[in-house]
Amino acid sequence: MKTFLIALMLPVLAYAKTPQQNAAKPAAPVNGFRAEFLANLDDVQEKILELAETTPADKFGWRPGNGVRSISEVYMHIAGGNYFLATFLGVEAPTRAKDLEQSVTKKADVIAELKRSFEHLRAAANRTEDLEKPVKMFGSPTTHRGVFITMLSHLHEHLGQSIAYARMNGVVPPWSGR
Image (tube, rainbow, N blue to C red):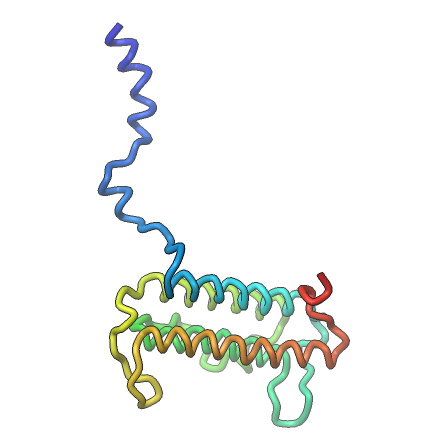
């Protein structure tokens, strides 16, 4: 009988995790600043990607005037900002082309780079432990929390710009029609 019970328990034990294994991956926060940041990041990311995916590929080179960023350049500015702002949290930016705005212009490439930049930003946010850690950003003192706020401000600023660009090209933001 003991042998039978042991045989039944072996598959269960093979997949059981030790308390140390469970502790290695902390659960995502459900409340507090980090959870609020990540929820806001999810929302703005979804809107930016959805708008980029809805905009026709032939409009990615459109710009509202001379010397103003095109649609693809705005999206690549967002991606570059995601990489750059994470450096203030001590997370190195991945090696990319020197000028994303000029080198990544095709719709599929723009969307892929945006997705990579959001993954990078989210990873940087998740590994940041001390939200009150002081840092200098653009020559001024702030904290990691302040960097997070700047990240969201930057994303929302360019989401608004992208909405205006889309509407000037007859593209309705998908979430506004739902």
